Length: 443
Image 1 (cartoon, rainbow, N blue to C red):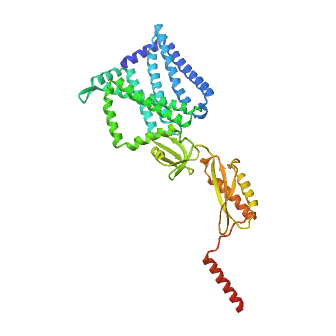
Image 2 (tube, helix red, strand yellow):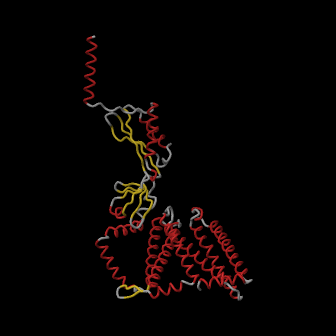
Image 3 (cartoon, rainbow, N blue to C red):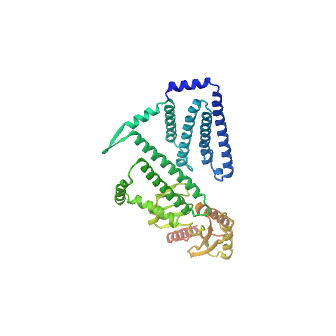
């Protein structure tokens, strides 16, 4: 309908007694829709364990923001059908239904985008919010064109405007439809992959590495299926992909060897379970806790808080020390040299009891003391102990044990060895003694 005709129909409706039924239907649809959405949200939050870990922008709340307008749209459509069935005028509802549909479209798009790109600790930037505002503006503009009756003219123009692509001419409407179908199906595939990944990560019966690899594979398959389906809907013959596949193979063989190797190495790591998220590992000069295992790289969180991004190929081709693979128990040591003549039968129990009383030190295996070697100045002793949390490091425990050893030294319970004199120091001491003796004789 044209704008003048729309305004005329709305004015006619306002003069009819049945306009109250339309206003009441709109009001009732809004109230009932939002109330039902709120009740559903509260019920889901009470029953879902996931809702305890999510803030106001979490999955449940975000979907409720879509569910409310969706229920309102359904109720408005039902009210319009009922009024038209009873031969009532419904021009106001004819305007309200597209407005509600546009609201649903905007909320659904925002929900999908945030579920895909704003999961976990990822913060949304200004560009993302600008895109959301631009998308909402385009939707409202399209609704305005539809309500005013200009939309069919635009579609007619797009259908009759063609662009030459190779030997063929393609209409603008077909190109826009192709882009829209690809974007929508990809977003749905990414959303489904994200939802499936969250489900898999919540399955406690599966190994963490197996959960990660299943999530990665499922997301990749969903994206491939979405691309193939979208191309089929557009009308592109899938046999043309054979040319692209050959070009991709040549590219992998020439310039993308490292990239392909890293991706394959990532799946090998996940499948063989040599590394898991939370393991404390050392690769070359890098040490830290495995915080992420992605398809191309692995992220280590160092004890100093610095993240190290390692290519997966490095984890396959290099020697990796995994302190958490078979057991989370790690051994720490500290050494001291006591003077000859010390009673080792007294010192050994003192040191073991001292270490056993330090937090994070395990009772089993118990701390132990051994004689490493005989130094010129005394016995070199090694105090060994075990901890169960390699991701917290050894430095704090070693420092605390050394502080307690110093207290024993200060109290006299342990006597540290004095460093042996070098030949030069002995010569200087002899010369100093001779000078002192000569001065004494002179006096």
